[in-house]
Amino acid sequence: MKIIADRAICEGHGMCEALAPDVFRVGDDGIVVPLADAVSASGHAVIELAVDTCPVQALRLE
Image 1 (tube, rainbow, N blue to C red):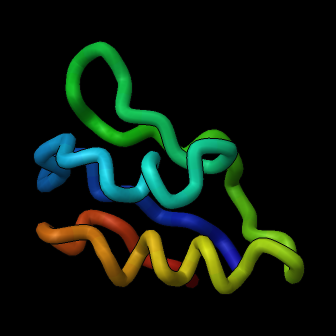
Image 2 (image 1 turned 90 degrees about the vertical axis):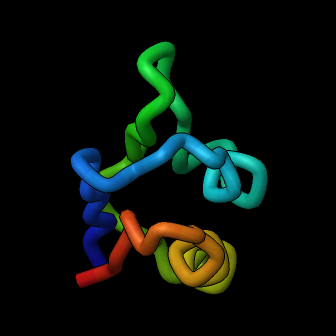
């Protein structure tokens, strides 16, 4: 699965980074930057939780 971050609607709450710091980083500009393009099978549950937890729905998996 691929991680898609909509940087235009991200508000930098950082919930994704708190849940999956190896995959998401809120940059100096306050906007999320995925550190990986794809989700491994072993980390899928945590990434899905981070995506579902985003308060502005700026993240999705394809």
